[in-house]
Each structure stands twice: as structure tokens, then as C-alpha cells.
Image (tube, rainbow, N blue to C red):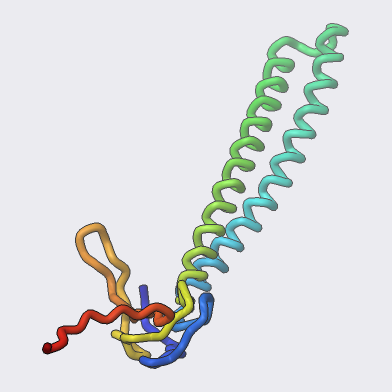
Length: 166
């Protein structure tokens, strides 16, 4: 959805499958991709930090277990160290899931950006162009059709029905 910023075809033009037909304003979609990428990079840095916290908590737990077995560490301190380790592991797991979600969000924003370039779905002739450069196109919903951009016809096989007088 957006304003047509580039319109490369006219009625009567021959197009090949994959040819660029038109481009919808990409500014908003590029900004969304950049935002998603930045969010992903931030979350990846957070995962590295949280993993290091979990690794330190594991080292502390190993030391605490040895001290607890030797009778040097109180039960409450051992339990606190064990709890801190379990919290650190849970935080690392949560951060990793957030990174997975951020990857999906980035993929989704890339998909939306890719869809701003409308390409020919088949070889044919542009037989009707319903839009002009600068117009705003709207996506369809279940109940309302979207903007019909153009019609591409396969002219390799043409059928004609004629009424011929005797």
C-alpha cells in the first residue's frame, strides 16, 4: 500500500515474466527494515551479555557446590547461588527466543519491502493500465478488493468469437 513512485510500462508494452512494472513508495518499508535490523542487533548483543552472566553464575555455582560439600558455605548461600544460576539460564533462554522473534520480524519487514516492487507474473502484453504514477494504491481485504493495477494478457493464443452473416 502506498504511492506509485515509478511506473515503467504503458498499455501495449510487451513484458517478460519478472520485469519490473512499478514501484510503490519504499521509504516507510525501508525504515521498518532498518528498525527491525537495529532491534535484532541490540538483542544479539543482549544475548551475548546474558550468556556471559549465565556462564559466570555457573562458575559461581560450581565453587559454591564444592564449598557446600566441604561445609564451608551455609545452605542459604548455596541455595541463593543455585537460584541465581537458574535465573541466569532462564534469562539467556528468554533472550535467545527474543532474537528468534526479531529474526522473524526482520524477515517480515523484508518481505513487505520486496512487495513494493511489482513484477510481471508472466510473459504478455499490458492490455490495460488502471493507475498512473503518483496515485495511491490500496491493498485488498476479504470484503473489499484492492486497487487493480493493470492487466497483462497472454497474446500467444488468441481466440475470437465472431458472428458472420451468411
